[in-house]
Length: 177
Image (cartoon, rainbow, N blue to C red; front, side, top):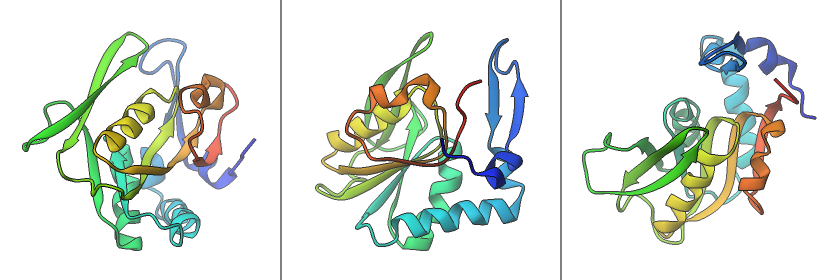
């Protein structure tokens, strides 16, 4: 189990949100702690600055907050993966299953250079559905998913089952709710 007490202590835990029985891990509190936010970015840079990544794809919304400064620091393009209908240009899309229903993520057509090594970034990986769709979207555009990064992971929700063979890096995990 990956335990990072600096990150754990910075994360606000909210019981029964968004519905009873769910413990919500609110990573926005990491953003209000400059020391921990800087620590997370430093860990990301150390892990990936010499990995050959040619672009970073950020999953809406909190993935943007970690991916943007990281992409800036390692000087690679940032690709935004947004909910359907949020991007103004021509897009490509991927639908994915949620616990109750489906959702769709999109990106601008042409944002991925064919053959480019792309790192997918999100704040937290739970079931892996959104990340699975993000990987498919990058590959549909001709990119190569070279890895997935998340600040926090919830392996008890079996995200690896949806992401077989994917290189997944995270800094902290919770073993159960």
